[in-house]
Image 1 (cartoon, one colour):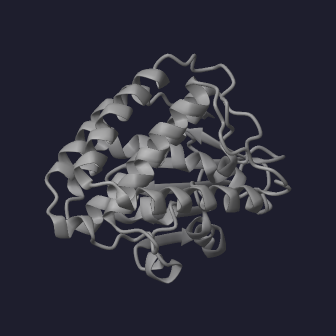
Image 2 (cartoon, rainbow, N blue to C red):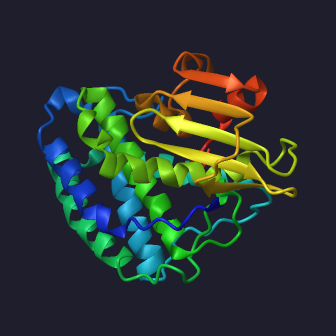
Length: 277
């Protein structure tokens, strides 16, 4: 048994962005207006949000320009509310922008953002922590991986709306998304008591497996443990990302998982989020 290792994803951004551009270029006018699983957003709105990620990431991290600075942030929910406000303002303003112009902007800013992320030293402190994993300070590799999950799941929201999901389920693209998301497990399970040696086993079918071990003080992600599991959870591959991104109702998600062992420990995964929500 050993601790889970850092995950490096910067090299994947160009591939993911290329798939996004090809997808958007294939959409009909009607496709752009299809509803996504994000209740307030159509396909175009999600694409607009992806553009905001590129532009805001470059402006803040590369150029040192913060624009709107949050004030009165006293809690995690205060931060979420601030970000939701920024997102809503951007989506509304971009309604005047055509799909063709949007694709052009995504293509140019996506390359710039991908190039910038590859310049960051993986183990230096990131400009933002990964708050949904409970971190106050994060290394750049984790910040970059978090950015990868944002790009992956928002593109998949578009693909789900237009019926073209298969490409992003390729293991080389889907596993990094889930492996990053699963790093929220120790923070999510922190309130569940455990004793030295307790092990929870999570399997996403056709993608990968993750182990959560209690070291006597806290839960930690590990690999290659041969200890018996107090609980094993199997999750359907096409549903896992939706659970962790607030993209499926809990009752519906329950129909796509199976739990062996402690039911309460297994069902807790249904409430885990790896997004700011």
